[in-house]
Amino acid sequence: MPPTNPPTGSASRLQWLVDRAAISDLLIDVARALDDRDWQGYAADFTEDGVLTVSPLIAQTITHRGREGMAEFVAGNLGRYAGTHHLSTNHEITLDGDTAEARSCFFAAHLIDANDPRRHADGAGWHHWKLRRTPEGWRCSHLTLEIRYFSGEVLLS
Image: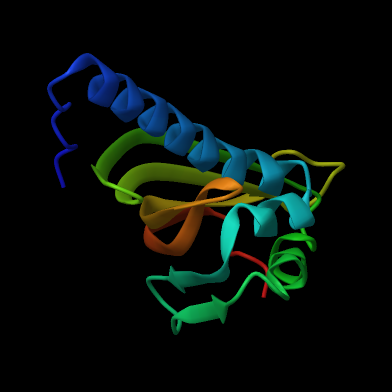
């Protein structure tokens, strides 16, 4: 998915840049919220009807629908780790008025034992985003994690 070309005209071009920066900031905030264990902040990065889909390589797809319960859902999965480290890079953003799509690379390290940082379970792949402009700013309406590989120890279940 190649990013959209900037529009012509200075006002349109400026709005295009502002929207791209706001979306990129949102994608990074998702990673920050996870690592800070800011489960409510993570949920707030989604629209009220937002959907989170995890498509792992070796297990069935997991889906959560709606901002309500999103914090508890994510805390129940990531809260069991001693810590996490999420990276979000290579943001490809396509704008279409008040909606957008994006693709980004992610790497996620999950610390299993706080006393032994050598014990970690990692995953990496692609985030596929559908985004919407809301009165709160840009929010994720659907995020799909396409996991491409695992390394280290097995993720906790």
